[in-house]
Length: 445
Ligand SMILES: Cc1cc2nc3c(=O)[nH]c(=O)nc-3n(C[C@H](O)[C@H](O)[C@H](O)COP(=O)(O)O)c2cc1C
Ligand SMILES: O=C(O)C(=O)c1ccccc1
Image (cartoon, rainbow, N blue to C red; front, side):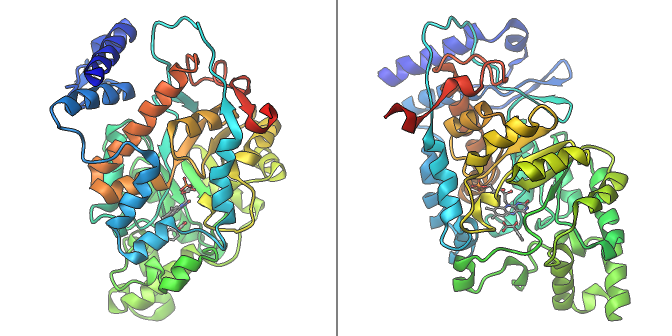
């Protein structure tokens, strides 16, 4: 009974509250959570609708086959994976100290709700990044080898992201080609993440960038913290490296790249098809050369990429300042989910100082450790413009392919929307969602 009342209440709140234009746009079937086009424009999914429709489905025992408990996605997904895949996604570097600190850092900040803030609508949770206004302040982080979690891999995730109006960042280590991911993503917003070949192989880099650009990827995320994979005990215990599997997962971009094919032929005197093992080893070495580029080298990418460039993996104020100096458009404050270095800082811990130093000069994205709506709210309050979701959507992929990814994205957004609403915060913009809504939990004692 309570659920029924609550469901109805949510529904009527929603219907009364969205502004007129949006209400006219929303033509979706509430039960199925389908969203339709109206007047040639895609109507915005409304995350809280998901919650109300679930209460209603609950009444007729038609709940979705996925849990809404964000901290259970990992264990439930793990039950469906091989030991190798589970170790790969859940695992992190060394003792796991960095990954643990990523999570612990969120609990150090608390949201102080304000009361009697008169509202007539649910909070607006859009984001303004890279000169664009996007409906939601989250994106799917670049994650490689997605077919080890579900046979539909990147195509399922990119399709779900487009349906939920969430940008999809495609990894260079994808198990699907650039062109196939673009097709699956359709008219969604898609960005490309580069694992960057050494300068001697700039022709291969140019080829990848050209393909990504042609396939409609509009921004370039360059990952700086993974020129070699970190010390990952779970994978070493399993003797597991996704590239070294016999089914060649994670090398789709190389195996479909004509310039890489030419390069391989010249170097090895045979075609890629004649020696797949050698070709995979060569590609792996091309994108994980073992050594880093320099700030100076970014010029090459600026010359060959028409669009915003965002550097991923920034943890220090000094590096953030250098990013501003060299004229890139954004940074991702990230420690790769604690997968690369042990003994590191929490990514959320370093965020405020980086925001203070460069937040008004460059777009700051954030990831590492986000698991629920409140985590997104805290990172945005500390000055990030957008959060990248990493492991959670991969757990969704393992749990239920495209539907599972959609579920995780909708659940995170619904949770965010209500978290802000119930704290009296009327939008995700810095004007309303800023440090004044937070306190350090330790300061309370
Ligand atoms: C299985 C897996 C594969 C990943 N692959 C990539 C990748 O190919 N490129 C990249 O830049 N980051 C990659 N990442 C890191 C994510 O983009 C992101 O920084 C990280 O997952 C954020 O931490 P979280 O998982 O705690 O949210 C990967 C992460 C995971 C879990
Ligand atoms: O595992 C990772 O964190 C990552 O970035 C990666 C590297 C190679 C293949 C797939 C993912």
